[in-house]
Image 1 (cartoon, rainbow, N blue to C red):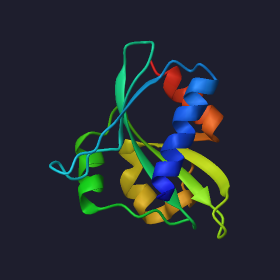
Image 2: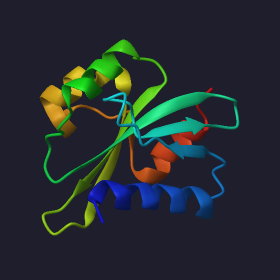
Image 3: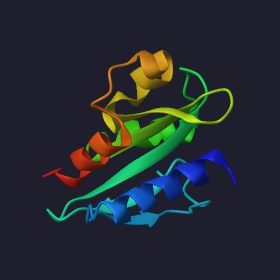
Length: 129
């Protein structure tokens, strides 16, 4: 199983276990390159997208299409990054706003996140109004 799929399964399980009431739709889109991985709807009737990334170092790889998408759609877009150790265990989770994708591509995890940890990130998205 791919690391990003494992991360997606962790997010789904966390959402159910903690009754977060976020509605996730996984987007499998090969026609519109750069489209984020998740379409999310919260209890405040807000839609937003989340790009999932898994990395083993501080650098995060984005395709030119992903960068273009977030530049064109800077609002209500997010990037959720799981950093793994060299052995594959999770070290940290970082949430970034989509508008910061250029800086994130350049600086990686050195850039200040709007949230740290899966719990804080999910709560931030859950309360997005």
